[in-house]
Image (cartoon, rainbow, N blue to C red; front, side, top):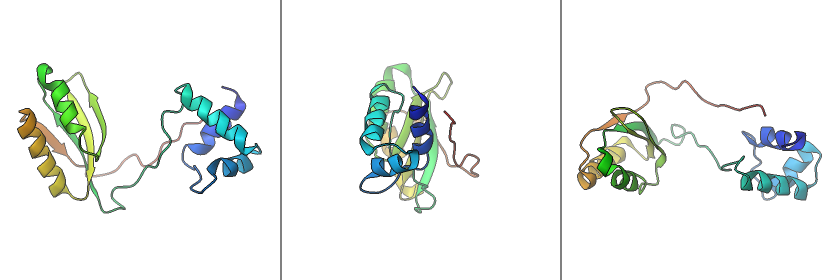
Length: 148
């Protein structure tokens, strides 16, 4: 990565232009041709430096409910459990931990009733009965940018 790549990454972390020609707008901001910005972003994505470009929405401002879930999943049921959890489009993260509660995931949905019903369904279809629903009471992290 050179200084231009770093400048592009710093610019797009929280201020990616929402318009029909976002790379042209980024080029204006960084004094670069549109094609150069696009080429560099594509190369950074191909190299795995940029994993994803997409929106982050505040579920609270959209009047959605969100929660963190933790489950005790026997080793032999992990694959089935994760496949079932990942069927829900509101699951944004799903990861294993070295802990008694070994599968953790975040879930966003129109309301908590939907989440409760989904968790009951996941439990029924996988046989995993210990799933904690841990909705946030207070938000501590709102935004994080990493200066590159």
